[in-house]
Length: 234
Image 1 (cartoon, helix red, strand yellow):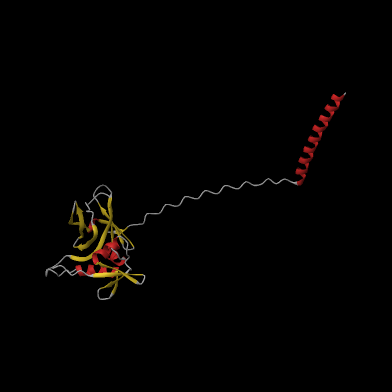
Image 2 (image 1 turned 90 degrees about the vertical axis):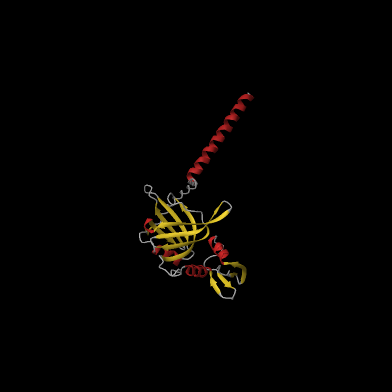
């Protein structure tokens, strides 16, 4: 039986916006329109954050005894696939929320992807022992998988929406070692500014000597012209 649809309003700057169902709110969180700290108001007037809504939903989905028999499911998380990189597993292009489930010795990721004009449920299983490295940054988890092709590794990035959920997921990966952050390249040194041209300082003595020489040259030229003119008069 389908569970009833819960409606929520988003509290923004003292006013409510909505209504939205849970799936829409999760989609807004994936697109970063909302953050985990945004406050929601349910139909009964109660308040909870987006993170609490997501954690509540994840806990409700995890029920190891629902079939009345032994289950290998250890934990389940609501997540979103951010990106993949490198050769290895064929990763469907999941859209929206996915379920990341630790089940026995595998990490099962299930969600929906588009196939032509239709939506299809897909899932992949990652062997926990194949996870070589893991890194948590805020609510994001990056996993590096051994691809079996030379020394190359496949990277999968998941958004877990809360830092606690991201850390818990990584704790279930026994063989994963922390991945060191790539050192940021040192900034190139800025070129030193060219020195401004300095004014040449001249002493008063040298300045006076130059003026005297100029005056002597002018007087010499004037005297020579007068001499020539007087010669023509005779």
